[in-house]
Length: 116
Image 1 (tube, rainbow, N blue to C red):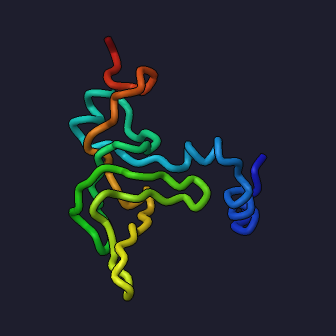
Image 2: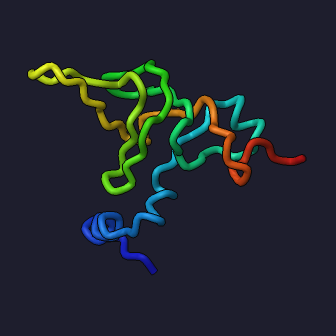
């Protein structure tokens, strides 16, 4: 039985091994893709196309360039900020704020269609 205490829930999440954090870094699929694959959520990977639907960058579409399992954030192409010295740095985005619009199908084991 897992505890219901918020402090223990946070401790559990912070101490999760990286291979189990994959299941936490999931995002919902766009409706048409969800109907075709017959699943609602899928773990985010590099080269997935996502749309931000919440936050300062709402409406921005782009490819996922990096997934940071340690911090629980993803980096999206085009979501950047210019620092005071002129360098451009990517901004981390929470996977809870995005929706997957196109799945990278280069991996054979990744679901591309169900019910065949």
